[in-house]
Amino acid sequence: MATVKTLSLLDSTIGKKAVMALTGLVLYGFVIVHMAGNLQIFLGPVAFNGYAATLKATPLLLWGARSVLLVSAALHVWAAVSLLGSTSAARSVDYKLRRYNRTSQAALSMKYGGFALLAFILFHIAHFTAPGTGLGIYKHSHTDVYANVVSSFSVWWVVAIYLVAQVFLGLHLFHGSWSLIQTLGFSHPRYDRMKQILPQGIGIGVAAGNILIALSVFAGIVRCRSSLRLHAWPSHPFLRPSPRRRHRFAARVTRAVSCRGARAGPSSRAGLATGSR
Image (cartoon, rainbow, N blue to C red; front, side, top):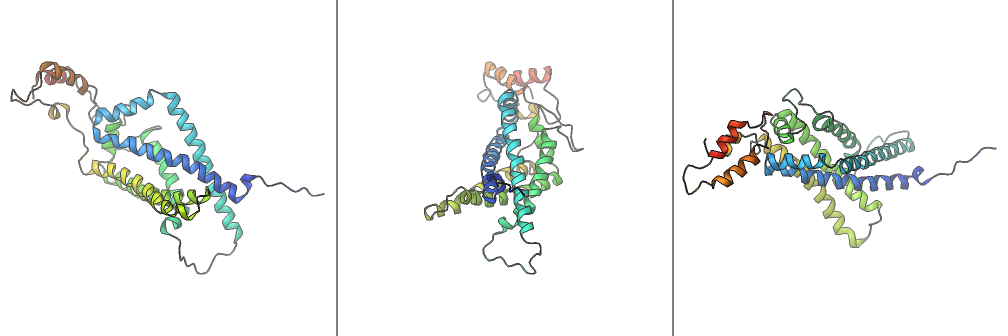
């Protein structure tokens, strides 16, 4: 007698879409927080490197978040590939002519854009985190994150890779947010306005924030600076801070690492403290 397998929730299309929605919600939260943290690069090397050092100083939180993200990403990819396979298997012969009346470009980009984003994520992790590489451009530092970002985005083809990836990310977030709202049951006229504004806001906001970082570095708005040249004190006595403030500020500057990876030495600290140029 043939046995009949009982379908579980994860075997159904609804179950797989629910997995995509819930894991997507976790990933949405991460990309928003990640972008907000990276925007601290506009505060300068001390603030940005301090932010990175704070994350590394809390390994329980850092690796806990990484574990949740890894599981969420794996389940998200599994659900996407499984749904794509089910769709292909449902129609062995493709359409001779496709006409899309209401499908957006964001929806059409999900199939290929998702795999493009997966490849970019692996590249991004290898570039800045594990193992971390200078791409043959600069010497990668595991402590001077500011210098890594500035050195990378000073090269046009690195900027181009990240810009293309952010376009795919924005489209993915736009359609993914809309699908998430539909899957979680917010399909009601009272939520129509939210379904129009929220996906666009998430997609455009995250992509624009990340693009702003890359273009600001490439345009020279965010750049490597010499500590001595940047922090030379004014010669006018009314504009010079007190000796105590100069010493305190010199101590802060010595914690900043230049884009060449060299810390300010004793002569630099003395120059900053005394106000020499």
